[in-house]
Amino acid sequence: MIQTETGTDAAPGPDYDAIVIGAGMSGLYQLYRLRELGLRALVLEAGTGVGGTWYWNRYPGARFDSESYSYAFSFSKELLEEWNWNEHFAPQPETLRYLNHVADRFDLRRDIRFSSRVVSAHYRDAAAGWEITVEDGTRFCARFLITAIGPLSAPTMPRIEGLDSFTGQSFHTARWPHEEVRFAGKRVAVIGTGATGVQTIQEVAKTAGHLTVFQRTPNWCAPLHNSRIDAEEMARLKAGYPEMFQRCQETFACFLHTPDPRGAFEVSDAEREAFFEKLYGEPGFGIWQGNFRDILTDRRANAAVSDFVARKIRQRVKDQTVAEKLIPKNHGFGTRRVPLETRYYEVYNQDNVKLVDISETPIERITPRGVQTSDAEYEFDIIIYATGFDAVTGSFDRIDFRGTGGQRLKDKWNEGPRTYLGVLVDGFPNMMMLIGPHMALGNIPRSIEYNVDWVTGLLRHAQGRGLTRIEATEAGVTAWNDHVKSLGKGLLSNEVNSWMTGVNTNVEGKQVRIINRYSGSAPAYRATCDEAAAAGYAALTQT
Ligand code: NA7
Image (cartoon, rainbow, N blue to C red):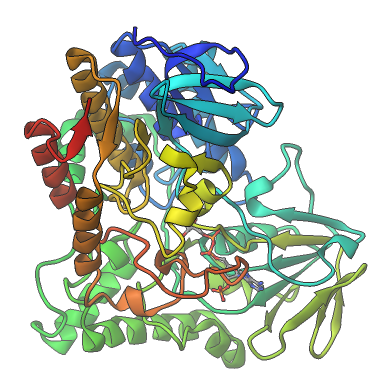
């Protein structure tokens, strides 16, 4: 065990080798690996249960957009063998059951403290460790701090006047109640049409008395084509797991889909159309992740696929005025996250559904009865805010992280995140981030497993050498930042406002586009991290 001391101004508290913030997928797996190292570890979790994203996002219709089995943990053969998925794209309750099963199976709960929202984490130089305080005032000290707080976990309410004045029920999708919310006979509003809004809308429309969708920007959506998995198919899938996980290791973003090597205009018009048609008819992210190699970099190629999907929307929506409102005009297909849908466009053919284009008639305020736009007041029983997250750095901004000399992480990242490999920050010794800013995202659990194993390797290295302090250098951080920036060049998505470019109209200071994501391939990311490890982590200061 690594000895820790409490900081000079800290109340006495339990000492740990490592504290992990968050019991989502990355926190759970990290705890499992920390135990293997024989370290004394504790996970602090704000919620009352495990699951992170899948614990908080209980909104109606929440489900995977990546194939369930490709999203699952791959580290345990026994776990893979015993778990059966019911659907190719599992709904949130199934995923949450899975993660609870993982927690139970590996007896993880005994080292997780629930209802423990971390409010601050301060590095104490004298102790070469972290002092972490949770909402109830309890302090914990640990040599190493591992953040597992997710890139999309800090929900944002819209900056609209009168939010608190509404007398009906209102919910943000990422803070959905644990009790069932019924929509039958109710007048329901959904504000927001990102991946979450789309899933919510298509589900709520099934039972709501009346549904009004407030859309500021339409997104390019494509069919999910979900289906059930029977026992026979599950057995076949299991038999193919080694090849499937191997494929995920080799694809660009760890999905089962990866770009086609052909350019969109290297084939005939008929072949191009047939390929788009095929992708549109197939399950999952193929049309986004497995399309011609240049649709996200070449304007003409991007216009071709955008035109194809626009035609589909016009075919599926009966009222052509509504169809035109649903077709994005300010960005091309795939330059924002593509929501996958199941009869989303057909929802707008229902008599009980109305689309309000708030780019034409903006919302002025929320009133006690509902929503006031520039041309009408709409009355509701329920308002659902599907208004997204303060992405990537938002979950960090909500905790008072302070490094050496009391410097605040929020200040350090004022102009955007700066990290070494997405994992470490100079001036914040012994802090490692899982799925931190500027590391490979994509099919996130695949990245999580790599990320956790890399951090575990670094801790093993520290353990073996009796190191008490590991820190990124400014030069290392600058080099990684420059690399990430250079990778972002030429990507059409970086010319568009979205959470992927760090823009959130509801958050002060996040109106300017930045390079918010690592946009290289996952294999390239892993190769760089593997090299860093093989070189004995020479880019880090180690004492
Ligand atoms: P997103 O993709 O950020 O979508 C948020 C939506 O809410 C989007 O349509 C926004 O319109 C809309 N929005 C946000 N603020 C407002 C205000 N003030 N007024 C009206 N409309 C607003 O979040 P999601 O939760 O859907 O998805 C996030 C990721 O989580 C997703 O990509 C998955 O990977 C998981 P805008 O486009 O800004 O005009």
